[in-house]
Amino acid sequence: MQYKTVSNYNYATRKNQMCWACYSKKLKQGGDSNSFFNKKHSTATKAKLASIDKSYTKTKSFSDAVKKGMGDTPCGGDINDVWRKKHGEVEAARRRIETNKKLSIAFSGSKNPMYGKPAPQGSGNGWKGWFNDVHFRSLRELMFLIEMADKNIEKAESNKFAIEYIDPLGVTRTYFPDFFVDQILYEIKPKKLWNTPSVQCKAKAAELFCYKMGFKYVLCDPVIDRLAIQRLVAAGVIKWMGDYGKRFDAFLASVV
Image (cartoon, rainbow, N blue to C red; front, side):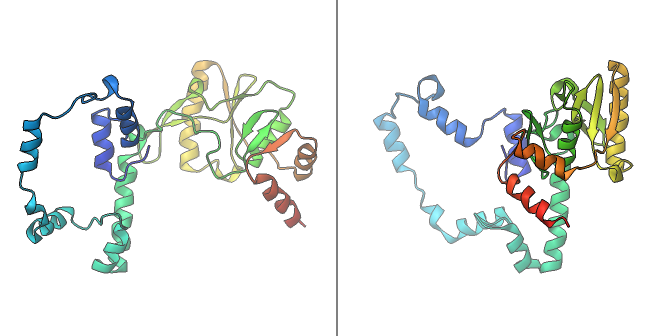
C-alpha cells in the first residue's frame, strides 16, 4: 500500500485504517460491515439536508481560500511542474531533493511498511528465475545454487533468519541473508562491495547473530560461468522469470 503524503500514511497507521479501495469493497458487502446498511434517512433528515445553503462553495472567495490552503499542491497534477513555473528549475530541484530526504527519513527503519519482512519474490533489478525450484535474483546467486546443487539449500529470506542492524545513518533496519547451507549463512555479493559501510554493518550484525545461533556467516562472490548456465538452461534445470531468457541470450551474443 502506497500513500501520496506522509500525513496520509501516519493517519492511516494511527487509526489502523484500511485503504479506500478495501474499505469501499467492505461497505458494498453490507451487513455489519456498513453501519448504515439497510437503513434510510427520515423525511425530516432529507428535508434538513436539502435546506442547507451550499451556494458559498461556488463563490470566488471560497475558491481562493481553498487554493490558499492547498499551497503549492496541485489537484491531480505534478508538484514539480508547479515549483518549476513558480520558483525556477534550480529552486524546484532543491525542493525535490529536500522532499525526498524527508520522505526517506519518514519511511526509514521501523516506519517502513516492509520493515522486518523479506523482499517479495520477483523484486530487485537482478536476473531472476529458478534453479531446481529455488528462486534466485542474480547471476551470482544462480552460480551459487549451481555450485551447491548437491547440498540441502534453504532460502534465508524468511523471518527465521531476520537480523536487525543499524545502518551507517543510525537507522534500525532488518537484513535477510541469501542462503543457508550446512549451518552457514551466505550473503552473495560482488567482492568490490564487501568493504562498503552498508555491507559491513550487515556483516557485523550477521556475525553476532550466527555466533548466538551456532552458525557461521560467509560473504561469497561466485564466478559466473556463462557456458554452464547455458547448458543448464538447455537442460531445463534453469527457468527464467519473464523475459530474462531473451536477455540472457542477448547477453551471451554480446560476449566476444
